[in-house]
Every structure is written in C-alpha cells, then in structure tokens.
Length: 470
Image (tube, rainbow, N blue to C red; front, side, top):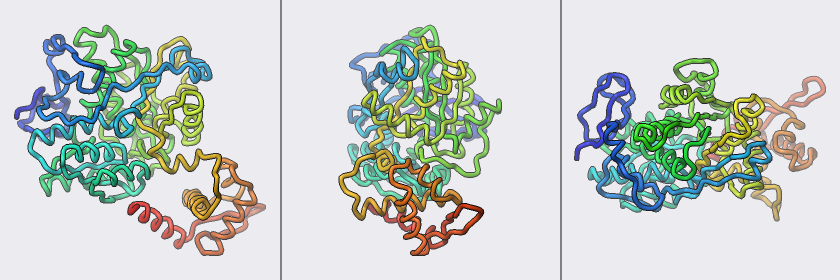
C-alpha cells in the first residue's frame, strides 16, 4: 500500500520512502505533512451526508474504514451568549457531540483505519485523555489492542472511558511531553503502530475536516477560535481552510485565534513576543489538562498559521475558564471542558482590546464535553444532597492540592475554593489536616500560613495512584 497523497517535508522538501505515517523527516527532522496537488484539489467532489467520511477524497487513502459515526457535528448560533458578550454572530462548533464526546474521534477513526490497513493488531499512543478515550473505543471496534501512555494528571472521566473500552494504561511522567517520549520508544522497541497525535500526521489530516464542515455550514467566518496544546489543532484548521481556498471552493480564509492557559502558554507567549519558536516552560500550572503541554510538537507551525492568517493569541486564567464554563452551560446548554470554554472566554478580552468587531462572524471550537473532567464537575457543583464522607474527603483533597501550589492562608483558600462553604468550615478542615500531619502552619504577622508536609505530598500521590486503579 503506497501513500496517497505523499508525505513531504516542510523544511527540506523531500518525500521519505515509507508506507507508514510519520511526523518527522528522517533526513532533516523537519515536519512532514500530506501534500495535495492543486489540480487534484480543484477536481475533488464531496458526496454523502455531512460527516467525517464525506471528506474521504481529501484524506489519505483508507481501505478498511473504522467508524462510529464521527463528524457532522452541529454549529450552533449562540444568540444568548453572543448577546451577553456583545457579538451578533457567535457560533459554537460543538465537537462534544462525537461518539466519545470529543473532536479526537476524527483522529481515532482515521488512525485506526490506517492501522488496520497496514495489518497491525496493536497500537500505542501518548495521551492526556481525549485521544486515549477515542483510540480505545475505535480499537475495540476494530479488535485491536490499545496501549495508552498517560501522564500523572489525567481527567478521571477520560480515564474511565479508557478503562471501559479495555485499553492497557501505563503512567509515565508528570506531563504529556514525557509520555510522548516513552510512547515513541515503546513503539520502536515493540513494533506497535504509533498512534500518538504528536508522532502521526494523520491526526492533523483528520482535524482539518472541522474546517471543511464549518465552511459547508456557514461559509468562511471572519474568525475561528481554538484551544492550543500541541498546536496541532490550529495548524490543522489552517491547512483545511487553505485547501478550501486552493480548491476554488472558498475565495478567502478566516483569521485564527489561539488560546492557551495562563499557567502554560508557550505558543501564546512566543506569539506575543514575536518569537518563531514556542517559549520554554519549566512547569505547567493549569487545571485545563487537555492543553497542559510544555513542549508543543506543532508549536512552530501553529505560530505560522496564526501570523499567516492575521490572527491573534490569548492567555486565559483557570478562573476565567471555569466562569465561562458555567455561562456556556447556563445560556446555551453546552457543557464544555475548560480548554473549550477558554475559547469563548478569550472573546471578552479581544472585544475590550478592539481586536474583534461586534458585527463580525466568530466560530469557537468546543473540543470536548465537561462531563469528562471529574475535578471540574466537583468544582462547579453548587448543590449536593449529601455532605457525607466522600464529600469531606474530596474537599480535603482540594485543600491539599491548593496548598501544594505554595504556601497560603485560610481566607485565601476560602476565596480560591469559590466561597462555597463557610470560612469556619475551611479552618476546621485545616485543623484536621494539621492534626494528621499532612500540613504544617506558622504565624507571620497577623496571618497563619499553611504548607504541605512530606506526609501530605505522599497522601496526594497515593490518591492519584488509587484513582488510576478505579
């Protein structure tokens, strides 16, 4: 089976002799991408209902199609939220409506189909959650063994999906960056099919179909906003819109806006400083695990896409993500994960700066459901029928994790936890944690500060280990 279209290096222009998808050029280490000739693009026709496989002519060749009904996701005109923000034509591309509730189902369908075409019975991938859940589901459909490498912090809802689909799960490192390195080594050593998004260019090809669908649903918008972790999604969207223009279907392209968490923004930081490469991030500090990536594999091309499109880049704080998550749910009935709500939260910033005009058409990409992010569900919950043992343990864990981030004091903890319990209750929890040796305190001026003990850190690690077994 030969590659169609060919993989071509963006740096040296060579096309490696390989039947398998790979992300990096063996000659110079540059990024490989599938290249379609202009005459081919102009002759392509889309047929069938609005779905992922409607765009099969603009996807690498597939013979054994593995599908769960991915793609064809709704594009909602967000009238109520648009009115609250001051935007007349705000649209939400809701990828949470895919089979496993995320945009990664597009990637999994194409990648698993390719693995079956090439005769593999086992695949390996590094994942922060969504891709792992998708690959596990599609591997189950195709009767493949699925080996997933996850960092220490993974959303519990996504981990539950992986377990339910019977994937083999291995924890490796604190971040997705370390997990990718391990998955790459494991793939080489075992000969398993490499399905990691950062190492397989089929993922980008799959995600560009989101651009195709947006165009067929409303034409070319003025702006498209997407979250950035590895940078691959922005790059894929830009590739899709450029192919639409080259094919003669569209006569323009949108401007792109890339959004990252304030606590982990290597691409946004580089964009704002006019750098060509992502900034080096020593430690990622955000609860938006889907975009907590310190070394983005597609960072350079994401920067190119943002600049070539005449776009913008915005850092968003975790608190802003959570507030917008609530607003999205309450005004539009869409429960999005933090990385997705960040795209909408960025609009308020851009409107205030005059980057966006209230009359322009804006599409925000909702990549995944908030139902997958267990910690966020706990944070957002205002009403509980029971305040039993499970709730008290969850509260104490949250307090320990808050203190783990650095020394703090009672009032600050109460404020950071949303003021959803009395200040007295916070101090009661702190007293119990200190009596068990999990935290220590000391007086400094008028405030009593709290810090985590070694025992406290060990308890948090044990809780993480327990969660990985559930």
